[in-house]
Image (cartoon, rainbow, N blue to C red; front, top):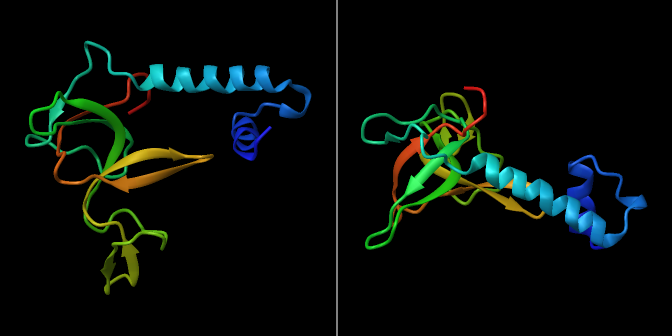
Length: 141
């Protein structure tokens, strides 16, 4: 079993030492599919245009992006209001506040991406702007 599968199993609370590799892969995939289903927008999802209202800073929501000539697509992400989300030093761009002596994530939208066994927040490029946002179905607001 590779390290990534083992780390995922640990994060999911699965005792992977007693499971055959195929069964472990099946369980990890089932959990991933449940996550995808949980974040899939339902037909009655209440979308809000970002021109009308931005999502609360730091709250994980569904973001709908649009690229010229392409259909809109949905990702999981968040909005960072100026000087509200602290940067942890591994970001290329930061917004430093002399007042608080803290480095913050620059204001804007960020996509949540799974990178092996951890989540990362990646700044969204302006060529594919966020046009709408919605709460994640089933999550408390």
